[in-house]
Image (cartoon, rainbow, N blue to C red):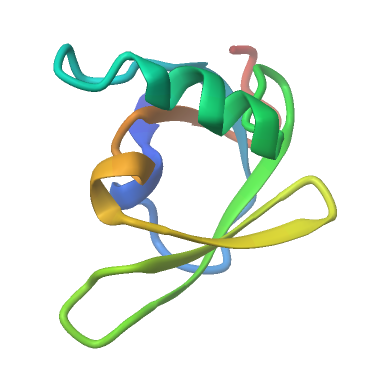
Amino acid sequence: MQRATLDQCPQAQPYRVAAVRPPQPAPHWAQQLAELGFLPGEPVMLMARAPGGDPLVVRVGASTYALRRAEAACVQVVQEGDVA
């Protein structure tokens, strides 16, 4: 099982959320991301990167969001089929 963060993933590859680890200065990001659906086990995919790499278009479950790269870096993922 190899973990990566969502901001590092190649586009259009299926992953699952393994964990959300917010940075120390912004612990509230964990709750915000959970409210959007970034919960362990949820399917997630990087759909597109804006020019310059920020923001990122990501799909979690059936919803699509624009996340800042720093927020996406909080989302640890495993490849689809791996056990989180």
